[in-house]
Length: 94
Image 1 (tube, rainbow, N blue to C red):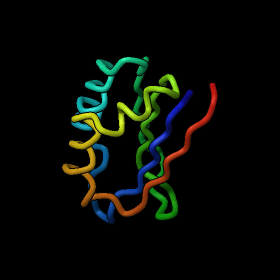
Image 2: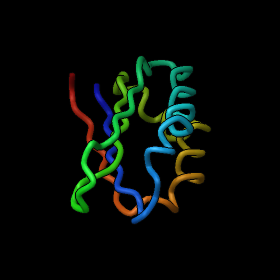
Image 3: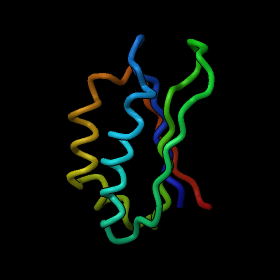
């Protein structure tokens, strides 16, 4: 399945500067059984009504509970949670 995390950071956050540190955290999830790939996309628009970052994870549906309690996921939430204005999570089949 694909697991999408779509993020709007609080105003004036330099989300482009966050790409590599966030990528580093999510690449650690590749050690979790059933997670096959991670990709990060940044918005190419500066419009206020656009989200800033999309994290796309390719995983087996059964890997989601392990991901939820993993150190990288918990670190993502603790280190970047206060910078997030809005977040959408979307799961779908390939």
